[in-house]
Image 1 (spheres, helix red, strand yellow):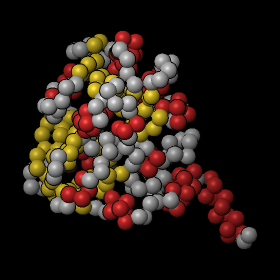
Image 2 (image 1 turned 180 degrees about the vertical axis):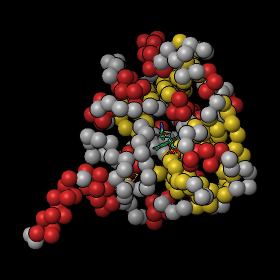
Image 3 (image 1 turned 45 degrees about the vertical axis):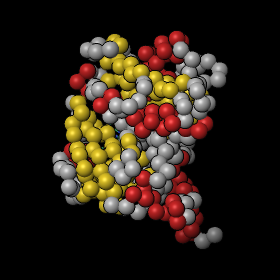
Length: 297
Ligand SMILES: Cc1cc2nc3c(=O)[nH]c(=O)nc-3n(C[C@H](O)[C@H](O)[C@H](O)COP(=O)(O)OP(=O)(O)OC[C@H]3O[C@@H](n4cnc5c(N)ncnc54)[C@H](O)[C@@H]3O)c2cc1C
Ligand code: FES
């Protein structure tokens, strides 16, 4: 092997992000069906409303409704906001010709998104990632969904799909303070769902963490599946709970997603070699424990 190639090998070996992305680049699915998901499609903003302190809901109508086919709960889209940024957002709801996202205003991208008025255009790339397979859940059983903060964003679409599969859901939604809460029935008018809220400052609902309330519900009711969405500390503490046999446990993670296609390596879930954008965001708890236990937010 020439010296140049040896040096390149050493350099690549030192940079796990690059090796992960190179491995995945080789496996990017270029079938015409998947390839279509990687292209940016224009979508018109239909409405964009504030739901609570910091949380907004935007509804968009893509010019071609093809990207609305076969969207699984907890899949995401890269949303390109002109003159600003491209950010990953989970699908919050779908209709025949529109798609909605619930988002928390954090920085430049989400601030620019909140300023868009009906009639503005954005670009959508997706659906991306591995979503939640509703067909894996036993029909006529019950699911417990635990959401922390803006982890509530994909919950409406998840509940809708579970209901179609004849699975009833209870939702635990934990926030810091009641100012972040909104009435989930505003976005889920037709669904029969029990929503339990928890606030860290005890301003509404259960006084404490969503994970504590979830453990109380798990002791009281029988669920066949637990799906936790939100900040790493919530997922970590639930993943550490000794759960009764027969309960399937999934988590939906967040990480820094830049390309969303498995090409850049920014979303590697260290110390594993999994990439959030193609291997996730949904994982069985046991398959991603090493990453969750590593610490951080
Ligand atoms: C697969 C996936 C799905 C997502 N779905 C949703 C969703 O449905 N709704 C939603 O509100 N958000 C969601 N997010 C997070 C969302 O992408 C970020 O909030 C967004 O990219 C922030 O962009 P920004 O330009 O506004 O902020 P930036 O300028 O990028 O960041 C501003 C500040 O916010 C912090 N920040 C950025 N991202 C996060 C984060 N994820 N958690 C906590 N702090 C953060 C940064 O550290 C920084 O301090 C998702 C993320 C991923 C990876
Ligand atoms: S590899 Fe680029 S965001 Fe996942």
